[in-house]
Length: 226
Image (cartoon, rainbow, N blue to C red; front, side, top):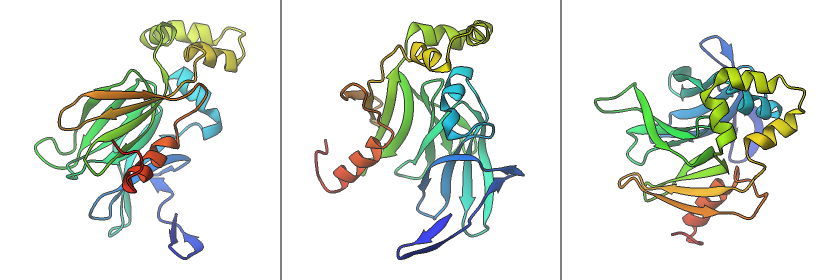
């Protein structure tokens, strides 16, 4: 949907991609040519079902592109597990997107020799929920919770995961086991050109889904930027 700067009625831009309706859509970013890159987190679940998506490793997420000139929506990447945040690089050569369940940032090439292909940009110490680029070309990633052995074992052994999830344990307790009972968030700053990490941790219980957006605004006005 599109709304002008003065408000008013929203205009529909797109509601499907290659015949599949857009349900649980998520983050977006826009390149210098006006193309919109956005995330379709799941074709099966809605936001309220996020625990199921995490626990079952649901992989129907998609990275999509909307061309405002042709008004076409195309699929760039399919089968993403818990697809979330998206950010176009400073030079417009690639777009990053979060894969929540695997705990990584992936990259889709828009230009150059690798155009049209994707690869892993960074393996993260936890599960990302959003990513933003600052004016320096650095990427800031919000990580909701850290990896733990329980989650690692379930991810590595799908049959074990299916068995555990069939046990008569309430979903919320399954989820707390998966995240280690710790909802402490992390900032992760990934410097694109150098490739190293810097981490900041928030107070317990503070989720970071909107904090990346806040930090980007603070950097824009010179508040607390580093």
